[in-house]
Image 1 (cartoon, rainbow, N blue to C red):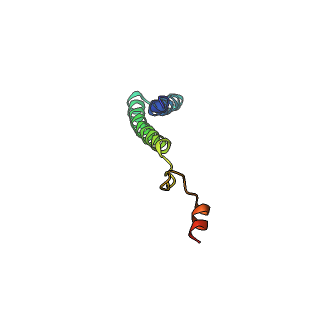
Image 2 (cartoon, one colour):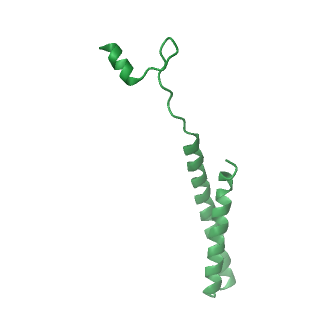
Image 3 (cartoon, helix red, strand yellow):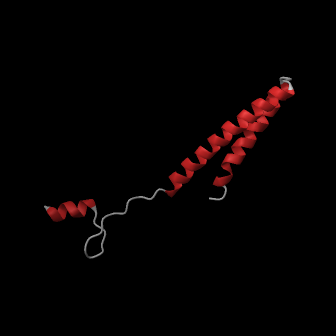
Length: 85
């Protein structure tokens, strides 16, 4: 569970590294590079937080508990249908 909380940071750093390398190779000026890098880091941090919340919500979902009879035994659908008929 602790590793899931690092997802936004990992996504942000990966996007920042790719953006920095791409802008360096294309010989962009410093102001343009910093502006684009800031926007990319902000957007991908937001995407990472959303992905983390979706994963945590998915992991925390519980299956509905089966119905319990008065004696404390679990009632199966097949058993319930045969008892009613």
